[in-house]
Length: 127
Ligand code: AMP
Image (cartoon, rainbow, N blue to C red):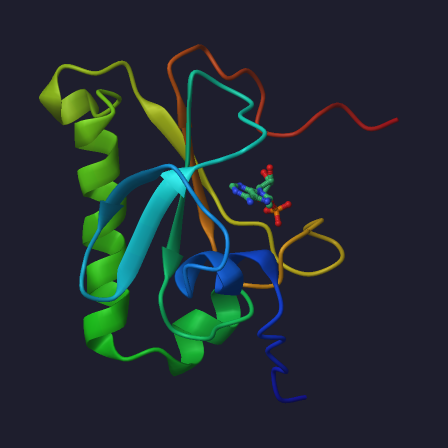
């Protein structure tokens, strides 16, 4: 099934400047900003500027330049926020939630960068 991108999602509005964000960095193809509901001392969202619904859409259809740019932007966010082990930081977790099973709330591809505390198990225990 083709991906249907809804340009009224909140991150599309941030990209168009219709609502504000706390920008961390911006590159040619990507934007990083603080998550409004931070779950850790460092909680940054990194998004492509292109209209991609989720990670598999991005991985399948984004250009090499966009994919490289987003990956480099994530590394730059880790360095800038002090969580990169290669730069003396204590580490981090990079998460992307996709679709219903992944409990994705915002339908614009995004990567969470979390750190600044010990983050615990990757998933909560099964109920
Ligand atoms: P996900 O469940 O992976 O789709 O996560 C969406 C994330 O977007 C959540 O962590 C929200 O706190 C975050 N979020 C929603 N609206 C905004 C906003 N206006 N600015 C920054 N982060 C937001």
